Amino acid sequence: MKSHTKKCYLYLAILIIGSQLLHAQSNFKLPAYESFRLDNGLEIFMVVQKEVPLVHFRAVVPAGTRRDTKDKAGLAGLTADALSTGTQSFDKTTIESQLDFLGASYNTSAGSEAAVISSSFVNKDASVVLPILTEMIVKPIFDLQEFEKLQERAIAGVDQMRESPRGVIGNYFNQMVYGDHPYANIPSGTKKSLQQIGIQDLKNFYAQNYQPQGSVLAIVGDFDPLVMKIQLSDLLSSWKNNTILAPTTPEIKALNKASVVVVNKEDARETTMLVGGIGVPRNVSDYIGIQVINTILGGRFTSWLNDELRVNSGLTYGARSSFSALKDGGSFSMSTFTANETTEQTIDLLLKTYQKMHDFGIDTKTLESAKNYVKGQFPPDYETNAAIARFFTDATVYEIPMDYIDKFTETVNSLDSKKAKQIIEDYFPKDNLQMVFIGKASEITPIVTKFGPVKVLEITEDTYY
Amino acid sequence: MPESIDPNLFYFYGVASPGTAPEILEAEMVQIISDIAQNGVSERELQKVKNQKLVALYSSLETIDGKSNTLGTYEMYFGDYKKMFSAPQSYEQLTVADIQRVAQKYFTKNNSTVGYLMSPENNTK
Image (cartoon, rainbow over all chains, first blue to last red; front, side):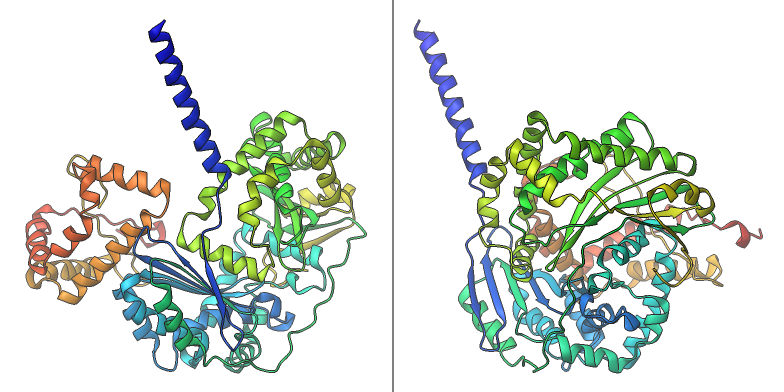
């Protein structure tokens, strides 16, 4: 009897520990942060994370590829690349040798929405690294020789990209989904558009788009926030705004008909395909619910698309779906690839699987499994200094509510079958699907005419429409 | 150099640019490797590598996956997981003389095997 009681206590203890762990998971929180704004409008977030003596710096400027024009597509990317090739006080060799010596990594690049200047370094080196990084943003010089090297490399990159269907398929798709909206811009440009860009274009693009108002800097890691605040203010307060207004952009128009693009790759043995339509802006209130539903459809290895197309039928090695969510809107797409001869079987099964979700919704068991999956995946998404910095800059750029992380678990938990049904209906485009097939056009075209008017393009051509 | 329990190999790779004979590339590479054995490396070069190794170690410890992997690596290959915690000091203790001594011991002609991987159209031998 006595020993039995002891055992009971032991079980009780285990249960208590267990419930505490669950409790800890459900309370995954945004780390404490401090934010302030310089007089020039630059917003700065500081997050102290003491685990390792590193610091991550991430500055985001509204100078992404959406600010490109069609005839000079690739300009935003080249401008961002050129930031690290020389500043008023530091030439390219000095930047490289100084940062390399300290083991600091750095990157400048342009995404759809914004240009990003990021770096990781050891905290004791902040006084050496920060002046270099901030000069890249505030005082780049755009050296002609370095620009010509970048341009040459970018043009060579276009050829390289065109060898891989998966490298270009999104570009074709974006033309169909976004139309006149600049999200249709080709981030890397075409050979023709890159050739039309000169060094003066970079200087103009910089003058128009790089300014503190609307930009945001997140700095995360092991540092003294009082010292950091002074350092950053000293380095960035001289950054001036221009008076040029941001360009107005057209609305993303609803798609009123299905359309199909077949891109011929004469030597192809397989067909790569992408099917979808208009998605959601990143700050849509149901974003988390959409992610859970998409997990079921095509967001994990045991998703319906991967199960049907890979596991059950062996038609492909992988099938997936995703939402690309930006500020003004986004896209939804399902993608897979298969051998030439199984192209029809694969696209039919993909569409059938998708239709099934619309017709029958999601059973409770699958919904619960997906909810657990996204909750389990969530905390590791915010482990590194870089990931935390990214959250803060994203939150500003995409207008994501600051309680996104704190409310994540609660929002996932609240998702029931009824709500799931509503989300499918509201956000997963059912009609007027846009399709891109890259492969042997002579074999694909006859199969896909049943889906809508077909336009045939060549993968080697320097255009996407 | 891969981490392994049994003795393994130290690899050097080079890709010849179009028109460069592999023998020329090999001679250049051997020259650089021998130079380390004969003349050592500079203090600044060594410090740079120490800095980079340290950043790599710290970066690996940012995630739970990286923590477990790094701890396991120290236990498995270096004999004790505790060595991970003193790795920064261990790096700092390394001198240019250590580098030269190790280079002289292992980077010898008798110790080396050289192979060329040729594309068919360039292979006239």
